[in-house]
Length: 290
Image 1 (cartoon, rainbow, N blue to C red):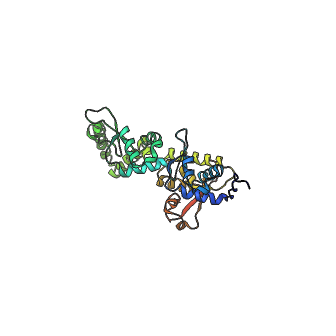
Image 2: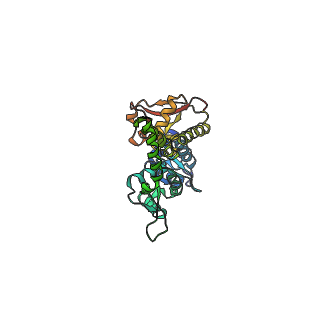
Image 3: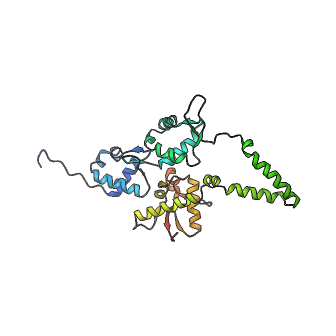
């Protein structure tokens, strides 16, 4: 061997490399593939191609999440839009203008700068952020966790007047007040705004569409990872779990339970679907044409 030659790097089994990448990805938020590779021990990062294959395999299985919001794809340990949702719901105490809100998110979660714009667009169309009036002397709209307080009396005055007239006629016909309350409550719950707040058809159709895309991306795999599907949707855990369980009851999908969920780290176990009996489901399989 000449003095300029190097010993051949021993081959590393794909399973071993995936394990090392998985460990390196813990706590990752907003890293490029190159930056993620640098977190590996030196002996494992020598083959850029092998590392890339390992990262792609973990993304496919939903172990880490790929976010495409810019020219450089970024990687996260958890689905980033849902993470910002949780941050805002738990810690935002005062309504802020968009620029101040972005600075607040970046300060508390530095790796999430690149996802802010996409998150903000989605959050203002759901029940995460509510638009509020500018402060006196300002023209900047603010956004907070709760709807801006509204004086309902003048807005509902015509409704209350009409309801009073209707109640007189219903009382004359001896219609029980409970029936009237039930009818009014049903009308409120079926309103477009309430259906949006509670999820519903849009969430279901998005869930099914994401499942179809996941199945199309890997046609050779019958059992699809729950975590991979969850990473493609921006749904709260309860909404996601309820939809998966409902579709399973309807026979649209089949859910596959984990034999030993207690063996998983808390962060991974939280990604599984859980039913009322505490059964944890790790995989999902489409069963019927919807």
